[in-house]
Length: 280
Image 1: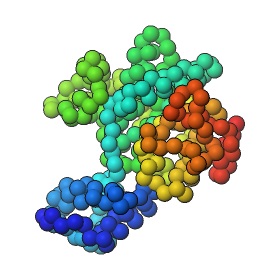
Image 2: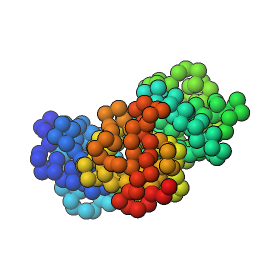
Image 3: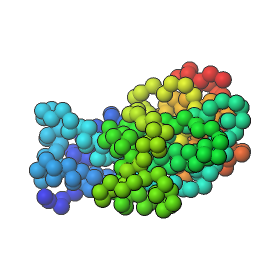
Image 4: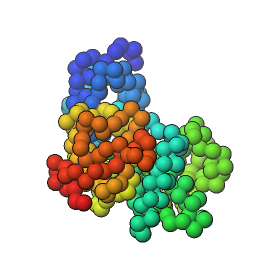
């Protein structure tokens, strides 16, 4: 396999494919990832260059190659209890929703391989043992491969050690050969589905907390605005949107504003989205 940088033609083809399928773009500072991300697929298919992979894609004879390329290019970086203070504030937001006398709902959008929703499930399951209600947790991702892994809740030794305290690991996971698998009583607390934030309609009903961290970074301004509109229809008035540390709603949508109570989070304002799906 050659060590040559990907050709501009290959970058253009893969970039167009990724944006068409997910809305995400390969910016100039991310182009270096293309070669690294696709090397395992090249080895699997016995190919030497990314241009050969382009030829295989454009040939159209392999129906699944496009999905495999997109899955490889998506940034699935995640870990258990990533940015721990965020989880404490999510608990506060859910408790405020529960004070209104209904079961709270959480949507983890762009959940990757499931560590974020499972972290929330552990937190709320432990709280439920003290008699508190259990919120509904829904997790989605555009990647079929990520959804399969998130549903299985099975992780390598390296993955299980990233952010997960040993006490919780022993309580909620069991060894499975060289890996660790979430116990059924944990995985059943999370409903995992495939969902495309750009192409699919918002999930049914409204949520009290919507986490979508480090996903919108890769969308164009126009696509990002469309996603914010859809989020506005999916979050209850006064509900909370949680973005990544490098993301913001400021200057991009009027449907959300910085939360006064939960620093770093955003509240739904009740402004009508362009899609017309917001109802106070």
